[in-house]
Length: 137
Picture 1: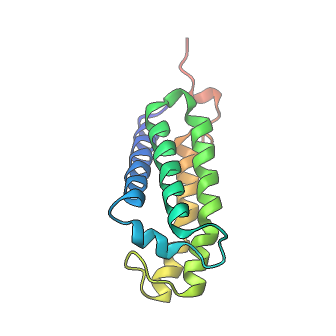
Picture 2: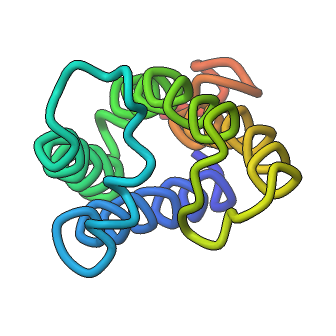
Picture 3: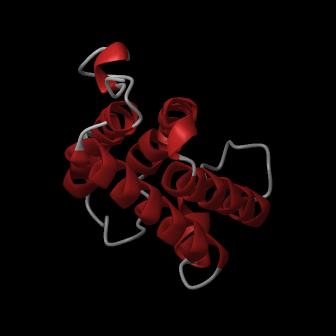
């Protein structure tokens, strides 16, 4: 695996751990504001659960490089699953994390696919073939 992918994996994993910790602590109310009104699970439970998942995925991405493909795919899937919440934030005009205008909320939507691609790339699922990432023996 290239140094760039390794750094990308560690950075993204670390960001996920930080976001997960923020879900459970200092930004809990901000994250609650992002849970769509139509979501059938309690806002606080949703935030706590997603925070735990973010910590687990992020820590796994950093600590389990041999499982980077699996964790990268799971992380990309997680970003896809939470995307409807981001769309709802835009559609409902919910203010959170400084996203206090429709323009800011709309621009944010375009960053979710970037996260999906980043997770897939850092996990070794995009770019060079799987064989090319293996060391020559």
